[in-house]
Length: 286
Length: 191
Image 1 (spheres, helix red, strand yellow):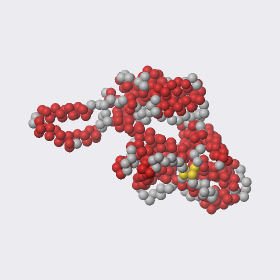
Image 2: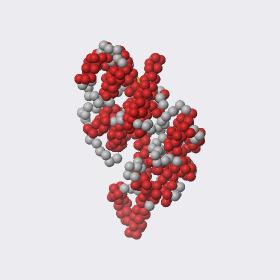
Image 3: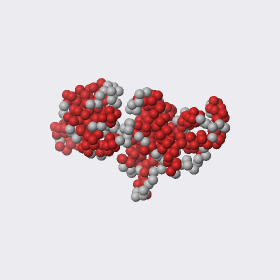
Image 4: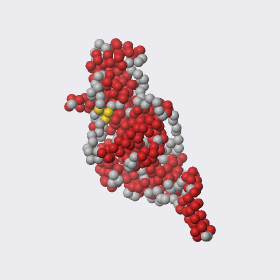
């Protein structure tokens, strides 16, 4: 324990502590909990705690608070991991449409393919027939499976900052739940009830329009999806997500030209969270 | 994810908090995914259960790295494998023996929190944490998590939570922590 802090313990042992002193101890405990203090002088601290019930109760309360924050933080981290599984799953599904160079090599080098053709050749006794199968196989390998709307991953909508006890906040939470259950129609109806709440829209307009847009996209109501997503301005933290879903709206609406423009814009921004997925989709369009 | 970390860097980043913490958490997520199929072949759990156990095990690993419970006697990957395997065994046991039994989830203090509580001679109470943050508003919850769990600095907390600057983030954090302590003390009175 640093000498300065040790001196502080000794000085405050027999005094009634003011808030500032308690805060200093709280800071010390925070450092310890955050792993920034390697060891604490247990005996000095224990003496200070024993002789100052006020300090003891303040610190006990503080540790309990930090434990609560940790638990909720761990829940949040776990959800991030589970979302990562979902995101990977959609990327993998998209990847299936176009194998990478390495994957193509693996497919080409699979021995049972060659064996299959040799056997076919032997059985049929005709090189033309084998060539026919070889061609058709290659074609089917290169054939791209369409990306389905159902594969589109959910946006991040979980955070609601600001007042949460209002009717709007409750309706928002229900809308999120309906969205998770893929009841997009109900989600949109609940969002509609919030629409008039100007205060809510000022604070949470970005995430509102994002969910509104994606729910409409899922229901293949492309015009409404586009209108909602276009309301998310560049300054909004949800803008990057809006860019991605707008590209998907054009893609599924078969407006290839617009989809290409939007995807190219994402690809050109190397910091965009959807660079890889946009590149894949773009190559599919081209 | 192209970034790679050594064991020492993993520990440093986890303890540092903020963006480094999130980056290394994501790295760990991708790094150990191969263990899923390995454990799945031994214990017959569903894909969903495996994913849930994997996420739980990663959270536990990060907790141990953060609070110093991991002492570096083994590689982080081996340490994680043990945690993950044990977590999956727990799920498997629950599936077979307690299928229809209602279970009450208990939350434990972590090693450092327990150490500090023991210093105050509150050993009996130092077993379980009562979860009380559900009643708090999302804004407060997010600020407290960003500060107390993810370890973001105040200027970044301000950006992440739409606050004007680090000073207002600090002031909000102080108010929210006070609010949480208020909730905890009310709970104590009821006890």
